[in-house]
Length: 233
Image 1 (cartoon, rainbow, N blue to C red):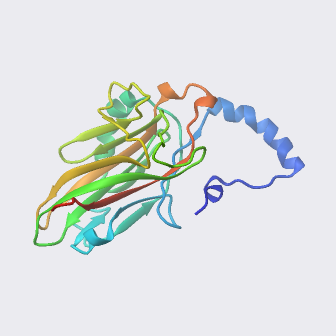
Image 2 (image 1 turned 45 degrees about the vertical axis):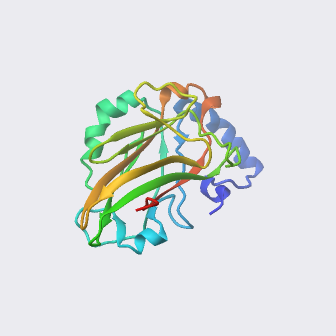
Image 3 (image 1 turned 45 degrees about the horizontal axis):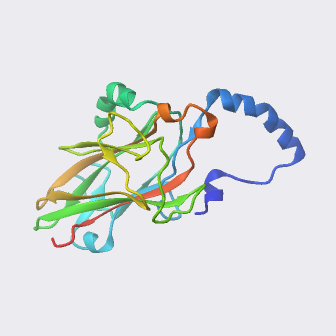
């Protein structure tokens, strides 16, 4: 899927351009931002999945607890959101978000997705995951890529809550920093016992303290999240 298809860029005539002139002030007043777009394949706006070798060992993913879905990949849809502070996410919304049993849960200020990592085998495994930027609107995704300073990502599992921020940011509630390069998050050490499943919730938002002007609006980018067995296990 091309970026132009996701962002809806197209030719407009003179009459349409005139109409757009009157719409611009309204756009500035509302300051609605298009949230980062998550990349799956040719369907859906973001994906969370299991790599091939890991899936062959009966590790799967599901949007429901105790289900028999055993999926290799799940896809969802992004949507426009307005910026919010990390403090507001934790104080006003986090408990509500974590009550979601599975799948997407959105408001005008954040996008969240709850899913389950499942081990259907008779063996124990140590699992890791990567969160990967595959495309960005205004910069090439190379080893020098740096994610926009306004983007926050929270990952909650049964034991830990991690809030990621750019190295350029100074969010006192964040406890992790995005990596430089395409793989902005790389974590290991999720232990899965035989027949065990673990619940995860991802939450995405723009920090309002980093987006005070239109010039500071972040670029659109695409992500994918991939789980795999830790090397050596």
